[in-house]
Length: 257
Image (tube, rainbow, N blue to C red):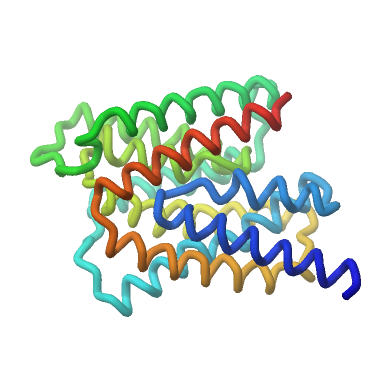
């Protein structure tokens, strides 16, 4: 078996596992899949574009399972409009402009916040177990600001947007955890990454030979992970989210150094 086939087997297996856990926890695939593409020889820009194209199917897999299973998690109209009309332009801006923060410092900061978020959700046992009955104007404005910041980072960095989107949707907008993850899969994984992929593809090269393999791994991993998400209790989902967040944050800090 030659080296190219081994590379494809490793790429498929790791991407499948990363997207399976990402679809259960609401994010984190980029912390594994994107660095793997760089390790396997792609330049940074090509790896980012290739990852963005493939990870769109993280959301597609989740949506396919939702449609087949007719899950009861309905989309919130207000959040949907914010994610589309505020989030998408933020993703484009994050992709095209250079944010005035050194990438090294941004990755370390993002890693620390991600680890802290994982610890918080692990300790807070009621995290995402009950939805907020009334969403105030203040919460809506704060949530919109959070979506802008997350959209900018989604466009400029490879990782973190899914996890922080899920956190914001639970802690600020007041969604139940499973419903928040569904929104993240629909808008961040599918729509935002599609917008980012088109934007990146217009300014840099995408390594198309690996895209079909990554799409299959991402779609199947997401489909299986969403199946688990539907069946698992909120407590189990919270623990998985916490572990993925802490592991992702530590990985980001390690990569930055």
